[in-house]
Amino acid sequence: MPKERFLVLQPGERRPGRVPLPPGCDVKARTADTEGRLAILENQLDVDIPPHAHHHADEFVYVLDGAMEVDFDGTTHRLTPGMCALLPHGIPHALRNASQPPARCLQISAPGGWEEFVEDICEAGPAVRKGGHPDLDRLNEIGAKYGMEYHG
Image 1 (cartoon, rainbow, N blue to C red):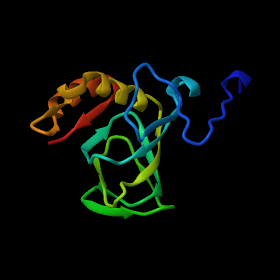
Image 2: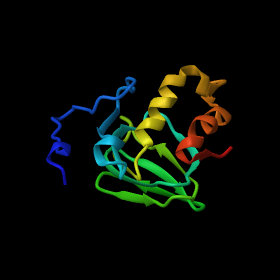
Image 3: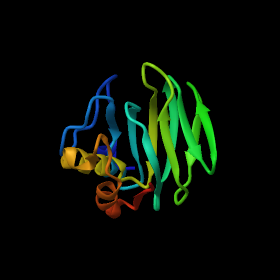
């Protein structure tokens, strides 16, 4: 492992990106930091994530604080601190906050690219929302290059 890839972050510190991400979405290791192998984010689940599938990346979530619900294969799973879920690529799933304050989780996506997708969404701004809800058509346009597909 090349020594120049070693990094240490202080509490609350995040890796810089090409655009600012919202509070509660902290990139801990970028895809470029891991030679494309994975991306690691610490997320606060302020908004529910509609059903979607990652066609290339497996997603792993580990709950740090609060509670969240994961819909997977027709079943809703409630995750509380210390619980985790592996969401295999190709299978639709959804994530919902289930606590106040909102759940906070560590998210690992392998291979990487997730933080780049989130940056693209932030760059698109209000264009990814329609009538106060996610615009799935627009999200799918953005997500195509990352193998992301949202379902209605």
